[in-house]
Each structure stands twice: as C-alpha cells, then as structure tokens.
Image 1 (cartoon, helix red, strand yellow):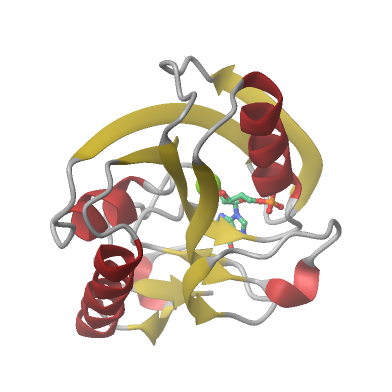
Image 2 (cartoon, protein in one colour):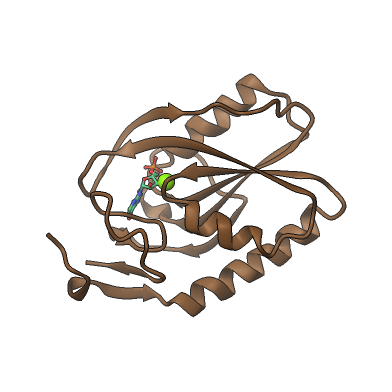
Length: 174
Ligand code: IMP
Ligand code: MG
C-alpha cells in the first residue's frame, strides 16, 4: 500500500487552480453567448469539472457519465468499459467533454466516436486537465489541456490508485 509520504508533488494545489482559471477564461472566450454542455467523465474528472465550472459564465448544463479503462493497477488496458453512458439529447448542442487525463487515448476516442455516432452536435470538443502525450496509442489530441505530463503514474485531484487519493488537492507520483 502506497502512503501519502511516498508521494512526490508534481503540481501544487495553487498551480492547478491557477491553470484551471486560465482554462476557464479561454472557454469563456470560445463559448461567449453560447450554451454549453459539460460532460464529466467519472470518476477521475470530478474535481476538475467542479472547479472549472465555477469560472464559466455561459449558460451551462452538466452531465456525468462513467467509463473505465484502467484495472486496479498502473497501466491502461486499452479496453473501455461504458459503465453508465446515458446522455440527454445533444443534437444541436455545444458539447465539451471533461477528462482528468488522456493516456493511451482509447477512452477519449471511444467517447468522441460514441457522441459523433449518436448525435449531430453543434460542436464537440475535448478538455483534459492532463495530457500524457508520450503514451498515446490512438490519434487524438485534446482541444484544451492544462499540463503535459511524462510517463509517470499520477494520483491526486481526482486521479486514483486502486480508488484511493482522489481527494488530494495536489497531483503527485510515486
Ligand atoms: P486512456 O484510455 O489510456 O487514455 O486512459 C484514460 C484514463 O485512464 C483516465 O481517464 C484515467 O482515469 C486513467 N489514467 C491514465 N493515466 C493515469 C494516471 O497516471 N493515474 C491515474 N489514472 C490514470
Ligand atoms: Mg478518467
């Protein structure tokens, strides 16, 4: 069992919050006077989504879906599980998917394809707090991201190891 003492801090609480505020400003510019649907990919993106949404000024609705691709270990399986992907009618809507991290890219691609296949949205974009670009197995890039990260297993601020550490206000690695 990893303890908090084994963790090294990669992004401090204040750095995360500052980056999220900047992202919020960019989104306010992009979606000025437009309505927006945020789609939070549970469970990892819950902290990011709630903090980000507080900076947004446009008429906003939030949906939550649950996908999983990781087992209980350190590496991505490449297989995506749609645990709960029930969504309202997104035809004609601006849709922004909110993720904690893009790793291999399978989750992001699955979700973008799923929405494209089921709805004719007005716009569809992807916003991920972290981008682990070096691990990408499928071609996908987030339209927005706060930090690019190395190939380390990260925990905190929504990211978990075996379900733990999501509550940490910072992001760390072992
Ligand atoms: P992908 O499908 O490989 O891109 O994986 C995306 C999902 O894997 C993310 O939404 C995270 O939940 C999880 N994940 C990827 N890297 C990490 C990590 O470093 N720590 C914790 N979870 C991670
Ligand atoms: Mg996730």
